[in-house]
Image 1 (cartoon, rainbow, N blue to C red):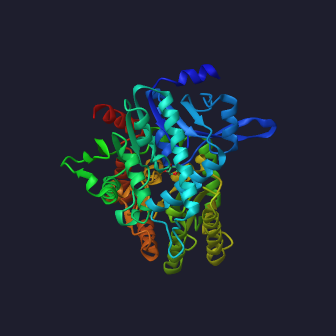
Image 2: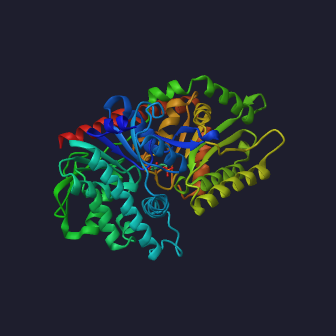
Image 3: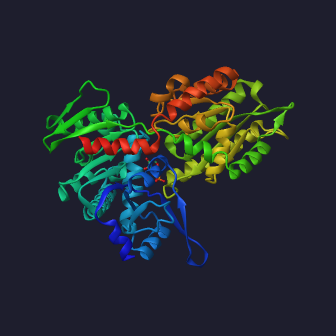
Length: 498
Ligand code: G6P
């Protein structure tokens, strides 16, 4: 243990995020099993291991992780992490719960994805203040661990809304470091961000402005961040927007250095996906799915595929309502199409997520009861996270439905065109970051408009083969323009050069 911990101090490149590359569960007889985490952040960062020798600092998410920290002293076994050096922090469970569930996922996630529903939300009261204190403690624990482990002048890449205060806190402890922050989410428009208590707005933006570089997935989110800095800091903040495409500058006397704003649009890992999608386990899932989909009149049924965490921002309920509208308004598709909806439960500690998960299940059942026949199940809903089955669905997809209300990027939109066997029409929300890169070859929808989404599904299903395969080829090229390893190295280079 001590040898491994010692090997982790003096790191030249560090990555910090709430969720690490693996999470542990305690199995029978006390054995620990490691499982790769979901979500765009882990997908993006998982490619860094072999290229950089970076040390990844993350939090223990639950009891299994805490046990792993007890057994290893926090320096995880590289056999579990695909060779990646990982240090896991055991933050007290109550502090962690308030920081992660209370502030990060119920406040910051909701603000950036614009998910609040008046008249009840948001509530900024005494309980919120107590949770905020935990969020500060949790960010401080990360800043302390990073300050302890980083070599002189090291590069530290801090990830996401969970750790918005870390750049500022780390700067106070270690002015010698090069620090970047990356937002994997959208950034809220200033008018929406302004609902946060004034002192919290300031702390969030000055926290990130503690970094040398604040990076975003699209120019759209970067601009929103700059607007929020100006809104929250007023004349203390001066934003320069030079003409070059991605070199926005924000400076403020609160942080006497300038913070550069960067845009790095994470792409799909085409090489990995193509190879992975043709392994035998995916082949088995393909056969099973084909059986569930069935054939009609001697031809394969068409498929509309979605794969998401069951997440409010992903807009799964409106997606199902649009599919129901399609079956109602366009009866020619009945019996001829199946909606493969993969919705993997997420953040189940939050009641609103549990309710949403139940709502998705109910709606799928309703549609099946309304329209299903002896040989045809209109919606095939899968809720057990299975990467091989997701890939099998990608391969089968005639249409991919990606209709989030807001989404930092949305990697599913980028992965399906790369993997699909016959070419796939992409119905894409203009609220997804991916829209800015893929919009031209997708069928773009307003995610709130159920009827327009139904019509887009019809257009997508009706697209002729030539057009579909031409569009898919262009989508796949755009989607893989910046693969994860390159995405990471670009940020590292920019941070060192600035
Ligand atoms: C999004 C966030 C990530 C997060 C992921 C999964 O992609 O940007 O930071 O890890 O969702 O969410 P979870 O709460 O399970 O980590």
